[in-house]
Image (tube, rainbow, N blue to C red; front, side, top):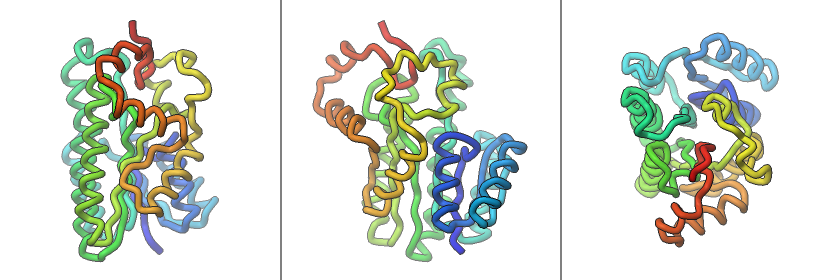
Length: 255
């Protein structure tokens, strides 16, 4: 049976991916800092879908812990990697301690780079495999360091998808907008500032993303509303976007 490794699987998009991939018949390797919740999710998924669930309780921003996850790709075949772990900052860049900004940079960029590298080497040797890097619609906008990190993830993934296609390895950036998860609660975001029609359900998002991966897409932007937003962002002058934007993709109202 094939195996999938998912970072940040205890809630939201990561949990939806755990359910989706287990439903597709994949055994799972679940990676998160919260060992208690990790074991709880593993038990639930294993019982529901009849798959094996391995847990790695690590802090991905710790280099020694990250090395343990990288080693897992060498110890046994992993057919699918989902780089989902992440967090946002409630305050703007200049109001955060630089150490907090560095930690976000590590998790959203450095960890994605290293785990993708660790995953694709054996995938290339086998001639099969897939990497889904969870990015964001925010990466198509200019809204601070979070947007910058996600822009990197999208461009990195799309470029790698072109390079690895002929080797049988698929790479895709998943770019959601606002999704009902714990992500925004942890930031202390006032969710009422975002219109209800802009919110997506994690299960619907993941189902759409999986279809896009199977279709060979390098970038997945689920839902028509966000496809339209991305199209407008790409062809609208940056100064106009900045002038018209009143709510950032991090949930902060702009003035």
